[in-house]
Length: 136
Image (cartoon, rainbow, N blue to C red):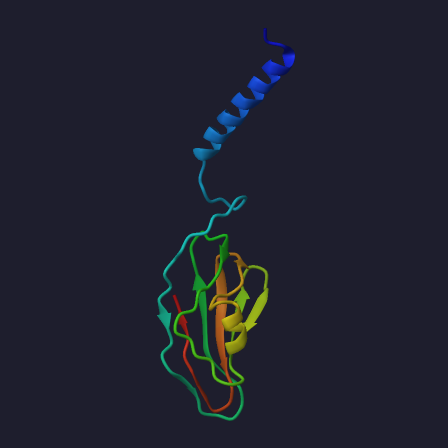
């Protein structure tokens, strides 16, 4: 014989199954529940020479992905000489990360996660240095 507890457990199980089916039909990526996708950027700066003795911005550009809730960059063949670094800035909230050769290695050639669909990427080169940067 079924009692009230059995009916409540059965109702909860049916509700859980119907909720999971309903959620499976919704869009997998919304701003309320963002899901990451890989996007090939394919940027390669080639050799960037800083021929002056002071630090100098040798690369400055925007990386944007339509409808992205967040961005994380993955760097390919990147060489940062002494006193050189990459600065990544979220255009949505202004958060900044600076990566020199050591910190780029610690981050396994990737950036932090940045809010929004666009970041500014700068390569600031140390004086009299040669650098390269690639974003996959």
